[in-house]
Every structure is written in structure tokens, then in C-alpha cells.
Length: 155
Image (tube, rainbow, N blue to C red; front, side, top):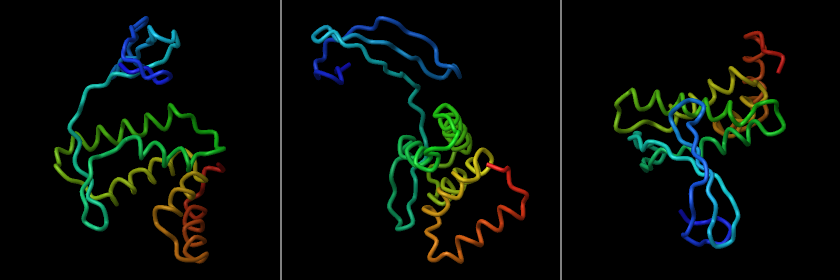
């Protein structure tokens, strides 16, 4: 494993632990060259479907992209990174269980919006405003009115 600090390949594992959900292993490593420590995670490589973009391009499912988008939506909100990671893990499980080879990006975006709606409505609106590309304030207000009509969570 390459050291993120000095780029040397000579590192050793000093501690290994099973992840919270039992589906990964957390390893503490130490670089033999610079002595710094860092953490890596080992996960089973799972076959996820290709994502079909709006323009027809296909690309591999990228959990890092989804986590980054959710983190931006949840910025300065009371939503922990572990909550975001659990939502992405649930999405990945759903995609794997479907057995599909390809999935439309809009289905993934909708699943993310649904998950955010359940935990933080402000994060949901932030994500929806980017994902749905509201053309004007009226579309944005219509979305807000729909949330308010459903009762809201007082987020």
C-alpha cells in the first residue's frame, strides 16, 4: 500500500478491525519510510450496474461521487458522514440485489433525493435544486410547497 504522505510502498499493518456493518475491514498502517500512520478500508469488490447518463454515456457506479454530492447537500446540516455512508450502502445493496446490468442515472438521483428527504429536508432541497436543474424560482417554490404540503419534518 502506497503511503499518502511520502508515496513509498513499504507500509505495514499495525491494527485491523471489522467495520461497523461487518462488510469491510479497517486497517491502520504505518509507513516504514516516514513513520506516519494512516487508515485504509478493505471492501469486497461487488459488481454494480453501469450508470446510464442522460446523454447515453455509460460509466461505472461511483460511490465516491454520490457521497460527495450528498455531503455538499448536507453541508452545515446535522447529518453525520456515517449516516450518508449508510444511505449509500443501502443504495448499493438495492442496486446489487436488482441484478440489472445498467441503471438510469435518474433512478439513482431519485433514490438519493428520497433518502435525503427522509433525514433532512434542507439537504433534500439543496440536492434537488442541483439534480433537477430548476429553471426559475417558480419551479423551486413549487418543490418547497410540495414539501410543506406533506407536513415537513421541521428540519
